[in-house]
Image (cartoon, rainbow, N blue to C red; front, top):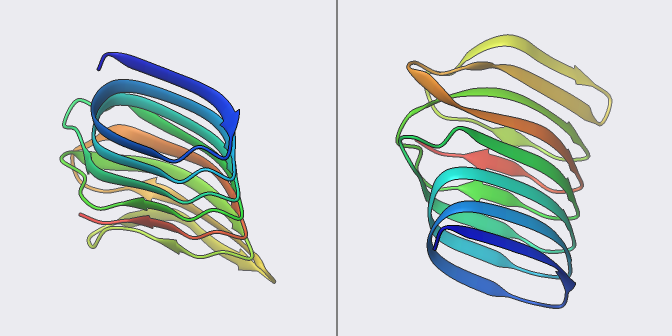
Length: 133
């Protein structure tokens, strides 16, 4: 699949491989086996899981509420700037932080891992952001 765009509610998705995905959804769970290039996720009340973030993936943007966001495997290094309220941010081992700040229930992490080719940025409210290597 080249490009998938969705704006809706109460839909659950299981996607094989896609180059680009844009979701603006509520009450929807999203499972993506392979995201090759770009992703933008604006969601409320639905969990997201990406099995494999491709080597040429360039950017993932998050604005999520009451949703967990999980990347199981990143095939290239990442550069990240993620803010979270009432949430946790878990990043790959070997990550270097230029900012790792906690203020009450707010958390802001910024930095990169080696060979950073993919940018992950955004905000999460009441949902964890977990990126594995």
